[in-house]
Image (tube, rainbow, N blue to C red; front, side):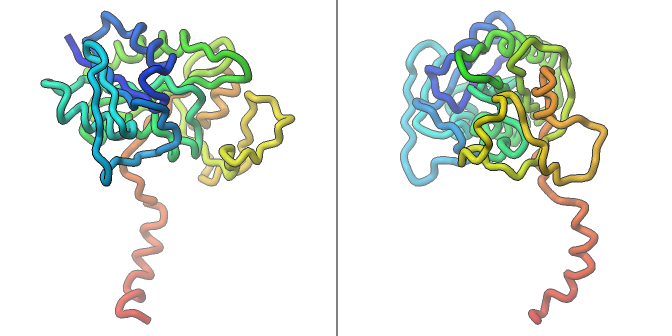
Length: 250
């Protein structure tokens, strides 16, 4: 049977992780390695100047006193005799859309798996005020995981999946939106509906691929494929022209 590694950034006790685990039972063998407490918005940080503490709390369940990326690295190096066929991070309490991807520990765990050549999913649930429900997201994660395992998805593929608040209308393949607001500083107008997003500054060229947060507003599941190469190829020609003038120093 295939092996799936589960992790998150909300901690081992998070409801989203539990829902994900319950949904995936029977699909594959499961190894759960998650932070011992919430590690939201730690991005791709690693623990390098402090010892890591690991606890085996039950069969195939471990906690680590580190970041989500730490959890993936440690699990691959020390906790599994075989390489996972898939790594799933989530289900996150809240969406990870647009620029939030840069800060997300949930997404970072999936990207770390991708760095090791393992197919991965980051799954996040958008929500409004009130109780957050993970059932639909867990069902979709199960369906997508089964498809990826059956198709033996290329090693290193990394998908950022976001689940809308209201009744799901379908699935859209999306691109990462770019915005200039900083929601962690609470600068958004509190009078705005909780489910609305401002596409005030999509800073790139127009594309036929829909934006991730617009899909969520329209009640679609958003799937954005992410890549490790962050090179801005459009700027390379300009830099090549000026590079000869940069050295010797002016």
